[in-house]
Image (cartoon, rainbow, N blue to C red; front, top):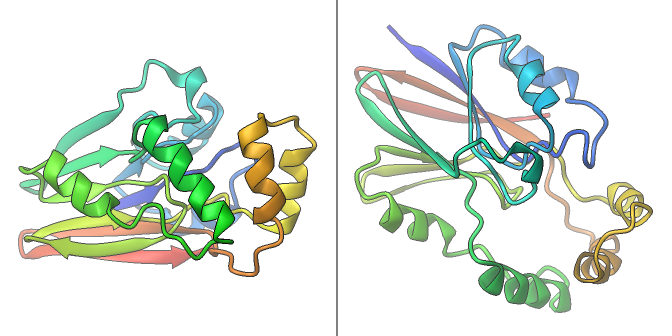
Length: 207
């Protein structure tokens, strides 16, 4: 028997986007479970996803309205230990890194060491699902699958301009001035994990 899990992160809905893309519901049709790795924005997003399958979610750094959600979850599926976490760290680490990213026009990679950090933090996991970076990524570290489905919301010139009209704080305003002119943009994406007794098959699906 195979358990199919839909994996999603960084929806920021309706914070930065008005609604979830229709393709999310198409890709997740028939999944047994949905994992949301944070930066949800509002509970209505979880309610929409729960119409497809049960949802297990964690709190991201943009989820002040969802304070009842835990920062991390651990669950077992088909005998595999899965940890779900957003992946953000102390603002004293995040903001200097974001500033370097801004000044380098995106050539500096502030989250390069995040998978290894999470691997050390959750040494007993078989799978670590995370978000925060808005960048799809999967790798194996010491036999543990690190899986980031990417972000549903992505920064583009249009989304940056929209955010600038919403009166962001000074720090966010500064880097958005640079971000909206960058030429490299991540495409929106989600993920699927298929788990059975023989192993785990991860897949990134573009939106």
